[in-house]
Image 1 (cartoon, one colour):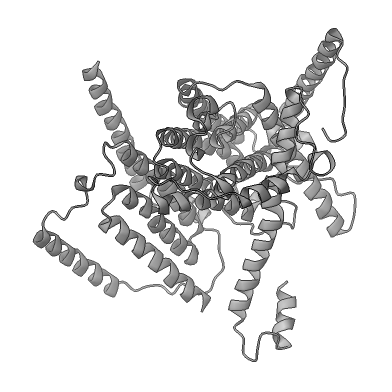
Image 2 (cartoon, rainbow over the protein chains, first blue to last red; image 1 turned 45 degrees about the vertical axis):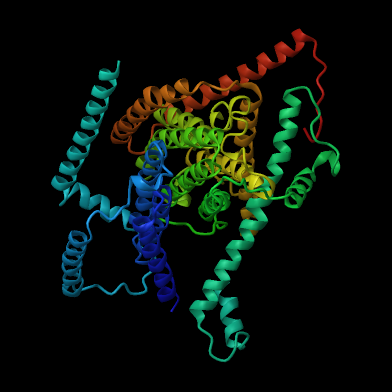
Length: 167
Length: 396
């Protein structure tokens, strides 16, 4: 009973915030509305008993990505100007893409055999995740790390070039 | 508590066919709210009085001493005054965000208390990921501060907010890395698990377990100061240049919320250091009664945390503010590489000495004791040379 109420509350918060992000005319509001979206998803992880995912969602998405996003939005010139973003670029292509993506997602949702979450309390998941990362999933984990490292170095190289050109 | 609730349900206190889930949920929510508002908020408020008294002493003043004995009730008077003031929202401000921001900051300060390990059985929720939780959740503060800075529509506020965000996300990295040496040694992320792995005697504290841990503890404490915008890292609210930074436009209770959260967060930062490195609530088992034991443990934990809070007040009273480039280079050029070395060093140490090395522990402990004794000796020597008349007041 409680779980159902909590789930629907979280779902409504997540979707409403995502809608504000997508439709708001003010890019700062869009950025701040992401908070509700990320926090809602974190809550759903917790509801499913995935405690490690919950805390990583807060750590990475709220503590890292969201802060950097807001930071970037605030350093943009003319943030309150309505014409800089979030305009509907083309109604027909947008509708087409939305329809296609929606169909694929609906198909995936209907086909997946969803495990029943049950009423198990919070079991520790951290050990299992750690062992999986350094055991069967070592190669994907390392490849993802290398890709992230490459992206980091690439960002530094690009920004250094711009700084050097100015000087 | 569950048994008591069950007996109430059986007696029909909640109607003929109540839903146990709903009642448990409500009871837990009420208990949490009571604990938070009876512990967290008064604590953060009383600390304001302590800080003003300590700070006054450092500057050869007396400090607030009018309301109550030695001004002890100053915090109530301040709160009452702020509630009675007009809550001004500037005409050009972004009103919804302006109103929302202080609540986010307070939320970030309330949430970590859920995993605060006061004593062996005094903890709201001993999560498996407690230590990650208590370091991750305060990140909400940044969002509140950025929101406040932007919504005020004031250049000082915006600069303050952005400085704060830059500072917090930078120092989160060394703070996060400083936790992992301890996690490596204990193999658990639960607050109680980490405390149970230590002993009551200082030689069993992780502070002295190996040299890397000692460095990690220092980094964690300094990062805690920086993350809470405390002197010497109080650039976001630098009074001399930014008025009050992100809090410039705030008035009434909303203004107080920011500062209550700052003082409360200082306690939380101290509690993280105490849990990880200073043995938490560990106290020698001298009494049989579990209740008395828990009380003693609570007192130990609070004393250790209050000592660290006092150190931060001491630093605030004696150190000047650093420049922003100094602050950033301290974080990125020194703390981050040192933290990585610490992590690797601890990993090697754990591989060589899986059960710890007693000799190193004793060596480091005696070194620490020697440093403290040297400090005290110098304090005594300087006071003698200055022929200062020491005035020890019982309430500071």
